[in-house]
View 1 (cartoon, helix red, strand yellow):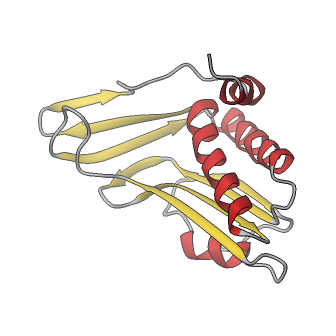
View 2 (cartoon, rainbow, N blue to C red):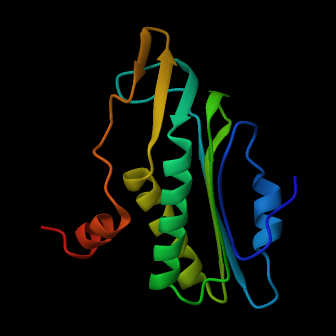
View 3 (cartoon, rainbow, N blue to C red):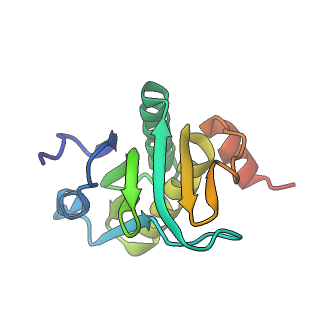
Length: 162
């Protein structure tokens, strides 16, 4: 897998996410901190024991636009971020497979951790990706579904809660 040119990498993948490639790509001489968050398919969720499979679907064009908007906003809040990757898997995943990865590189850990945390939280709140769980007792699309926000509304809500 070839990583992209530039300092931002966003995208949807139908195959395994390139975790090692993303971390290697994010490493720059001026960035002493590289933080990776990987969200993996797990074998249970509240009220659903024995989950054995997850399927993700996305509104591709809109999802990629919104992933880029999240990355742009992270760069606005943490201007020292060097490289930033937001990658999400679609299709059917086995338990243990990575569903999403965020990688943030910055000169110092505070900025790298802050940007990575913001990116995963904003991605979940603003990007149109849906999850179906299959478990021993049934299956369901998005029981925990939430209303998607534009990135600007999400930032406003986070900065000014209630």
